[in-house]
Length: 350
Image 1 (tube, helix red, strand yellow):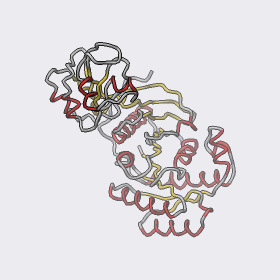
Image 2 (cartoon, one colour; image 1 turned 135 degrees about the vertical axis):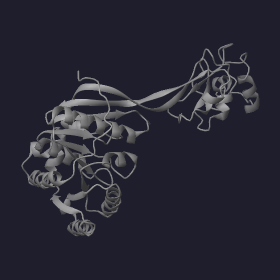
Image 3 (tube, rainbow, N blue to C red; image 1 turned 60 degrees about the horizontal axis):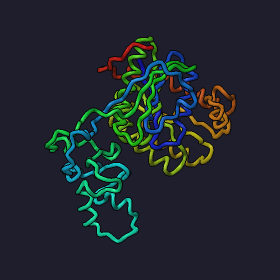
Image 4 (cartoon, rainbow, N blue to C red; image 1 turned 180 degrees about the vertical axis):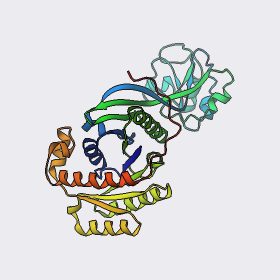
């Protein structure tokens, strides 16, 4: 099978719009949204989920209140300020705060030291005697495990964290693999790898020849995970100074990963000289220029209608994207097969 990754050095260049159109034009393709930090391909393709799986990565600490003696060692050692004292009626308190301080709202002068002494005694709370305990802020927790290692009472659990979900869905353009990463969740590169492996297995199972990936923007971990082992990268760039800078970065990354690349300029007619300069830079680096897409309001109108531009229009942009797909498909057919290996075991489709 062949795997095309549509990529850009930054967000907003139009790569997702190009992928949506390619999905409508391609035959026998599996679609993957690798932009897990800000996924939006589903807005156009309207997938219907047929399989849903949790994505786990890293670990998070959790304090068991019934076992915690409130010695405060975990709070003392946590360098990420992710552990805080908690009790009835006091909300969420950070280091140096106490139920009494929160209840008073500064209505009477009290030193922070005496306030801390009151907090350390169960007799002094806003609502009466309580059992002290500590809790973990799961967003602030970095999963280092120091609190778990040093808790003398074994009151802390350290278990794999569910960071999001990934899906196999059906769309009008074929099967789609995509994900929803949790708020402030990390390991997006690992999730991208999970999606690509799942897509490879779907393609093998359904005998589909092409995988179309909407890659992550930039040059970070999710981009590396999007590109590694792909057959071909299509760089979608915009004719601006920042677009040139970002194109050079992502082109260098693809070269270091050994992935051949081609380039198309989106909104090319907004700055003819910048477009020509981008194309010259690409050719100097052995990157073929395979198309120009002019600015066209039909692209925005198609997105509002939740369609790709080739489905909603026969205007200048739609014609340019059709020609771009023809050139891209020819070069994809000439490229090496995608690196397939270490596929995940998936549950049966349901």
